[in-house]
Image (cartoon, rainbow, N blue to C red; front, side):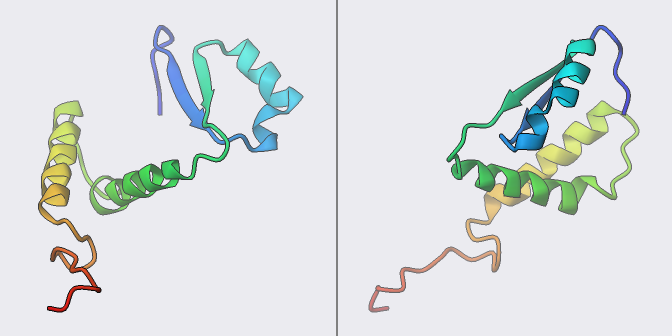
Length: 102
C-alpha cells in the first residue's frame, strides 16, 4: 500500500502492550504522518464492528478486482445493500422469538 507523503495514515490499534513499546513509540515519532488511535479498554462492542469489516473484506473485497476507487466504492455499496436486505445473516430470514407460542 502506498500513500503520498502529504497524506496522514490513521491506524486504530488495541491497547495490547506490544503497541506501546519504546521501539514502536520511536518509529511513530520518526514517522509523524502515521497517527495511532487506541481503542478503549473494555470495549467489546467494537468486536461486532471488527466482525462486520471482516465479513466485508472476506466476502467482497479480498478477491475483487477494482480498476479505480469508484469501482471499490460501488462494490462496498453493493455489499451494504445486500447486507441490509437480510436481517439474519445465517439464513436470510428474520429471527423468530423462541418464547413465542407460534
